[in-house]
Image (tube, rainbow, N blue to C red):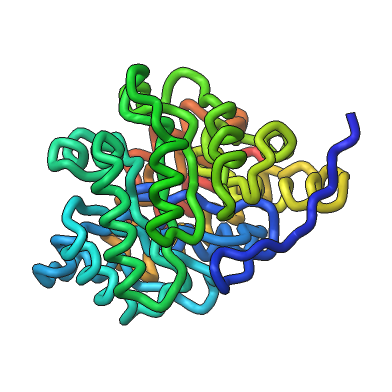
Length: 327
């Protein structure tokens, strides 16, 4: 079947997005090093790790560090989570100091430590509160405000359409919809029908999210849901090429060249070098262990490589391990 070739521009408020796939926010993963890498491979837009609104207003240094953005990763959003409209508005004003292009509000995180405090996807149990949070943040900043939702809280409260409409009325400039309820976490398969329903129900851009692990699936999501942009999360782990591949397929109707083991190892080293540069070797290498395991997927002897990856302590350790890879 011939792929539909989509345009390569859209707007979120006054921010122009050029491309076909963007990087989802993932705690402990989508830091500056990874965001910059994904942009270099064609990510049209990136969203940083979620940041606690209370942490920001209580002057948490760790929270502020998560807001740091560079020129190499634009356009970029910072994502805030919280359950109090005024606190979220105050946090959004603080976030503006880091010059984000967009402020994103997390209403989709399923993690127990987040929802047990009434944040993340727990907000979807109170649609009116969702609207008040969006309105408060929108009033407090001069950049576009977006919202990331789930399908709903559980199978008995599938309300993404209702919440999306409320967020639009409150001033949201776009919504991202992940096709699972909080109860489902990340299994089973994402429901793309809910993305299609939201798209038909609002006039602001809708970004589709869930189970996009290849360029082919990105194209299918566009065609099936009619969404304005595809957001890729776990499909980009150890695989920043997915953005290049998606751009080639959707924008040009042709596949990109397969990734070689040599390129895989080269990009892994480049990625981890940036991690160490930004966070110091000790922290950078601890975080590099999971990334190395993801990059090794599909390489001959991957199981043994992953076992050694969890023992990495220095960048030289990684160089030595990579020398053992058959390229």
